Image (cartoon, rainbow over all chains, first blue to last red; front, side, top):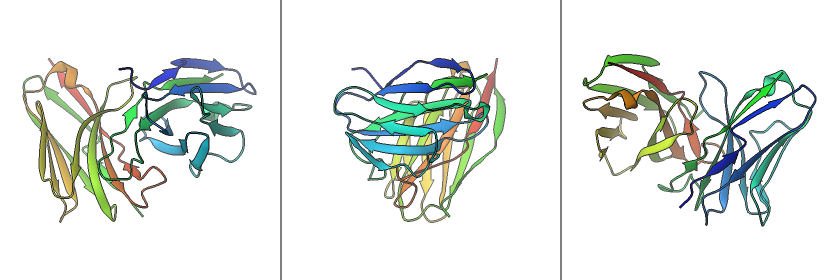
Length: 117
Length: 114
């Protein structure tokens, strides 16, 4: 039973390039969440998706960032024209139902560490 | 504003000793409280989830308590091991806690020394 798989684990991009982060949720989970973590900081919510739908993207910058969760395949977090401030660890989590409901468990991936040089 | 405050920020103890980590929250309306362990360079892993009606829950050497009246939780680690070195994150779930329903604390960074 595979958990949440994120790849790549480490990604280095030059300023101005695009970064694509992939997340395969636990099999059968239709709810995916993306978080950003800076050193010594807590996890910050970015976006919540269900299959083919963005439910809430209030934590995601309006420019350069986008996310999708297609019917088939992994969820993708895309950062265009990266800047040094985008350097962080990006975590994906999945759950079988909304995590705000009762005691629905959320499973986290190992994260992708993005470094912009 | 929903908030989760954890203390201490960091803690160093000797292997074999016990320790207690604290979490205070102002999230409302409360649904449940979770403790996660995050090893350096890894994703968070769930230790316990407690709903309103539960005031204690154990997972091996980890015991979490919840006082919903004072809005406080603690995570007690017994007979610490080197592998317990990690960040411990308190997360409170509620309506209005963000689109994911979760409000994250910044974590307590625990170091176990041999």
